[in-house]
Image (cartoon, rainbow, N blue to C red; front, side, top):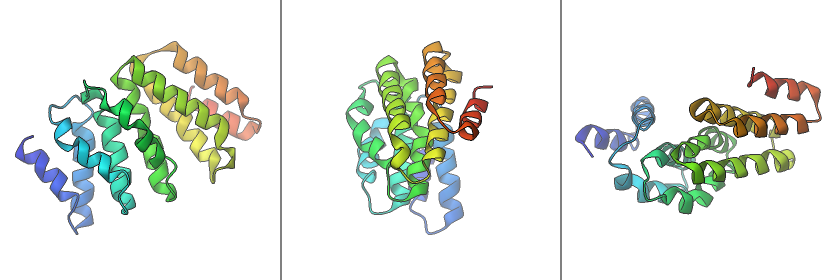
Length: 181
């Protein structure tokens, strides 16, 4: 890992919130493409998934989701349960940010795509007892759309549209359907 990337990760620990935010955004941008250094930070990110600091938990889930495309060993499959737990975090913003980025795991390959779609679909069906479940459902549908846009797999579209049809409230059915217009 080059010095610039190391500085970004170090800046995440800064007391300066602006510096943290800039480092966070740079890391997300860099990990949109495959990187060679994923395993240099992987174990620490997995540890951070259960850190007391909700910001660390959120960033770890988001970074690991993005790093899935840089994971030829498929560690993401083994570590997925811990990442998925962050999407249920007691801190709503932490859970939501994690849920909004977890679709990226599906870009890593067929096995990872199936894993993500299974969990997103199941969560859509069962989240009605969760706080703000309509926002969670929206994030799930949006994540499926993001994945579809990247891989152009019609099964994703069919699955998402099928989930939208399950929504009983017309207001939310329309809102979710707009994602696919």
